[in-house]
Length: 380
Image (cartoon, rainbow, N blue to C red; front, side, top):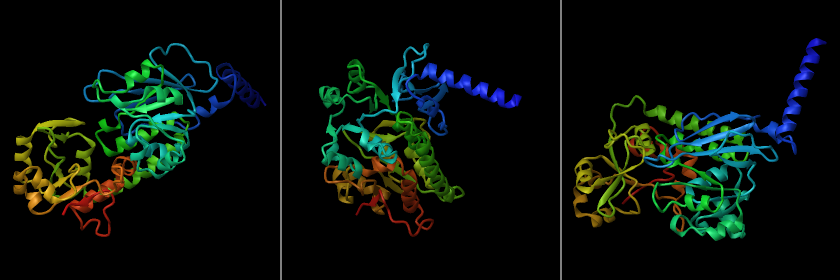
């Protein structure tokens, strides 16, 4: 009997506490039924405290000295004190705008397209649910960066705008914050691993109380990816790989600690710039990349190229590249729609395992002989 009385007393105290902080509903109690755990991402962290969820984005762009902090609270809950500098957002969010195609797969996988009211360029979207929303007139174009239509965004009155930053004057987030809008900064491109990049689905889920769904989706992604990566772990023969193409007098390469570099490593190959410690892109002198790339076995992620002839027309010296002579150029543009939207940067965000399977088949076809390339194609 004493145990029963003690239990009842604790429940009464809990109930009164919840009513104090959340007088309009019991949604507060649902906020922590499913907590997320960040295991791979180095760009954001999550803390549960005072019946609210605290998120911090610490690495939004290369060399960033700015961080973004969020306090997510259930609707109707009184905001606790002591959280100056946080953007206060009520959850679940009912409307949003997205300014990058890399965010669409997260939104689609979480079943949140019905809450998407604006996107930078709906015509370029590859995700079918987003394209359907655009055709039905439920999605407006809002532009991005220097073409961002602030008036259109204000007219839509989204509860949050998911964007990204580069640290340059072209970034949209200062204008959005100045206009009094809530800005969710997604820095997935700064992650050093493919799984760290995919884990940003949890960041998006937090704003909509979809933690349980995000954990389940990510767990499945993680399992598939790690099973594939295990196929190449003991390989001793690892071909060398270069990436990207020159533009405007420079050749921006993926850093040696980037997710691209880790894709190559997990696929059983050696990235020629693996010794660099950068997570983002690095502008290199063309002559330097030329010397390193001359003997590379494979060349991947070749921009807009769709044929080998485009490589030699770009620079006749490329005809001396080993990869060109052996026709081992592969580009990640197999799934591009008529408007130029590339699904590699959409569904590829939540299918790093499929990207990895493509690369394993490219570098070591004997390991996955029955795999058909999904995102990549061989240039001919």
